Image 1: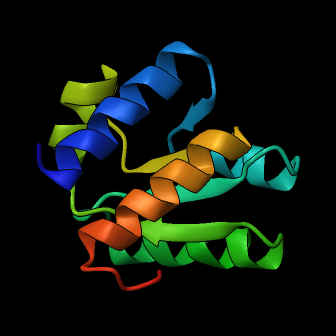
Image 2: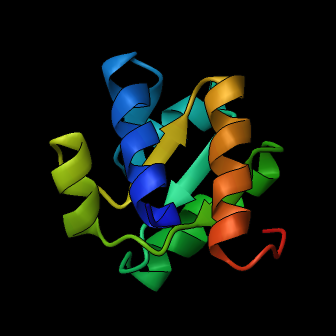
Length: 109
């Protein structure tokens, strides 16, 4: 199974568990409320939105990582079209971050 598929599957599980905030506004609220542990950005997210979200996450001490998945792929996995996902659970965040690093060839994000 490809790493991207594993990430999408895990995101689907996290969504059903209620551990995600989907969309830029919801993710930024989670970051501001300090409930976000990780912010994930779709590959085809606009550079302006990605920059804004990364800046806010960095300001609040939350790690942001880019995905190789597109918004269409995220929609298929999550049932909602979005390019910004805040992960609100430490366990899911650690696993997703490790998978993102593996997806990038072992390079830490």
